[in-house]
Image 1 (cartoon, rainbow, N blue to C red):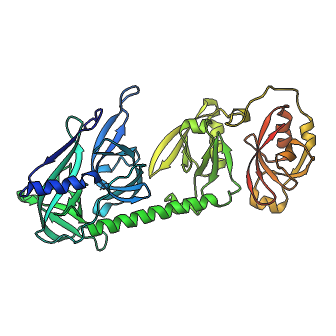
Image 2: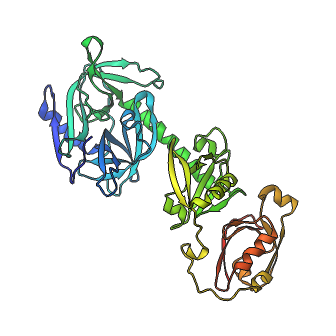
Length: 457
């Protein structure tokens, strides 16, 4: 493993160029800006500088309004997909990569990153590679001093009809006698004009019997076709997540230590690659809450807590009660097929500690608050869709509740993060309130809208 030291030096190393070195140098100079080094940043020990580990070459190939796409070989990042992966350019810029998708059969992995500055992208050659054509394989890696280095090797296309086991239908793979090394693996294959004729997917080596095993290159036609399919699937999945976010929240919505939760639905099965609708999804996170401090973000899928599987919000709450005495709850989250562990401090924030809520001095108890609003149990039709809560039967005009927008027919499901099963719970929570308090309600309004409502007493 090699550490990335402060600063980046650009060193162009042309190795094993058979002829026309000056011509190839000009071609490589034009394409150099499209190449990066793909690295993983790992913490060594607390208080020490993180270690940067090179995972091989990458090529930037598409720009969509400052959203760039980058390809590297899948074998280089296998097993580290759940860690933070970055692209490092020749001028020292570092970009956090977001996984788009992969095609294991042709050893291709695609990532996305954003840049406010314009970055060069690789362009497909006007003509496909042909047998005997001169090519140059170029990639980037970290050298012994920590500087970013370009490596290049020239050769010819030795074979154009290589068949890969389990490869996608129609994928075209070449063999080249250029020396594809660890540094050039995942790099770009250029023609004499600087056009991309392929993507290096397998190293040159010695095969059985001591015979030279040619390096393998995915043709640019297949590379761009497969990459575009991965991007299209990625964008489609993003649109589905966005569409689901616009749908009305199910009745099992719950507020849990600053985490706005909902149970997994059938619509989530494809997006989260699940076989059954089990688990809990984090819809949003209140800043500075225990959930935020634990590291949760919107979209996280909770699958377990302590040593138990989490089927739904109710299950999570039951596990939380068992762990209350410990003061901490270990929660298991599934991200990109990998398990991650979060440790949640079991201390509920008061409404006054939530962002936007300013605490005020406590004054005398406000028994008048209970007189300003009355509630009743859910009727049979409401129970079918809501499961729990109390319905507002009357609200005093000009009261704090009326000013907050509560109306007759609204269903209050939570007060201060307490799930309401009956009128007694609602009245008990109001009895705790004091003048100047700000109460947090979760309300399903009579018109079908829903959300949190704050009431200033």
